[in-house]
Length: 290
Image 1 (cartoon, rainbow, N blue to C red):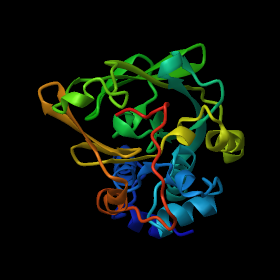
Image 2: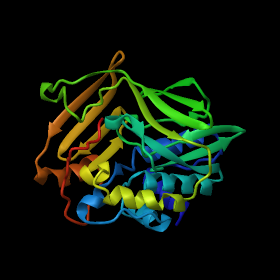
Image 3: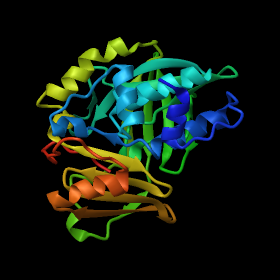
Image 4: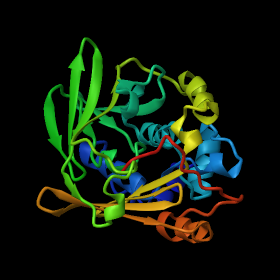
């Protein structure tokens, strides 16, 4: 595995390679705009592999994406390889329908320490919940970014990541009440502790998310990519686009249902993804939102 291959995959020109916040931000942004957050393997009859070698082959050599256990694993490897001081952390995702955090650690997060300050980086939450810049590990501090205002809060050793969102305008009236549309202005995202983890700690989650009938990944096919203006998602057979701040404190959200025979071309042109096997889109009762 070659770091230069990774840089080429994400389109990052490694000039100077200073181990500072600016470099960290650029790597995060290049990866999130070139590597989709997606679970398409599962809906092509293939497994979501956990090993770094398999992840590197899928994302870097095959120009694919992956879910957090893959995409953030690759980010962790790249930042460590570059010389950053990194720590792998585990998160518990907030599940909106039941108003609680997951009982199992199912989200991989990366902590980076620069000049004594700690930052959280995450290139694989997808949709409009994706951070565009590293978040300083500071409790109660509002951190405005292009997608939203992010806030980290610490309570008794547990950290909580929340998001304060803008208003939204949906011109497609039939989608105003869609389950695909995020309804909460204040959105809980996930919790985590600062206990160091290894990829082995996520073996159970990797199996559970691919096999459990209650897993959103089993019930819904999903592909999400950040753009220069917002985010584009393919959720089942629906394309969803969000343009951040298209008007003052308002996001534009547009939906379009597409035919199954159109999806292969959409994946290639919009997300840069070419699949080796037949893809069967799925939009079940448990859905992602944008």
